[in-house]
Image: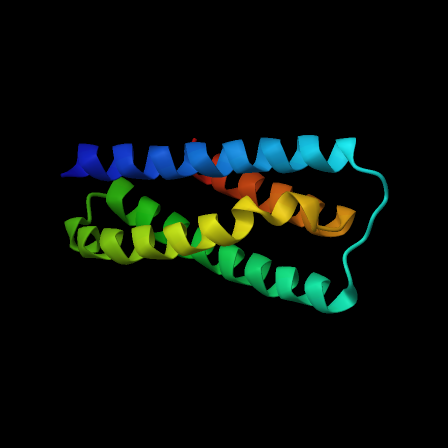
Length: 116
């Protein structure tokens, strides 16, 4: 079960890293178009949710590393949260401001550091 957990989470992290790379590429290719403030605040809420998810994921990851098998039950809810967030973030690259993109990259770097 531990191997499955790490495999599932590695796939999730890989998808997140891929989204981050695509967002960075798209952002670099676009001009300085900035989304409307209402759209921007919506993306801030999505990023808030994503950051909360990453914090929860890191906590579960650390417990698994410590041998706590009781957290395996949280895997399903984490996967569900991730799928919803991935769908939202998938189309974000066109609409994120440069500060929001930087925040997304910072959150992803936090995740990467935690699972090293």
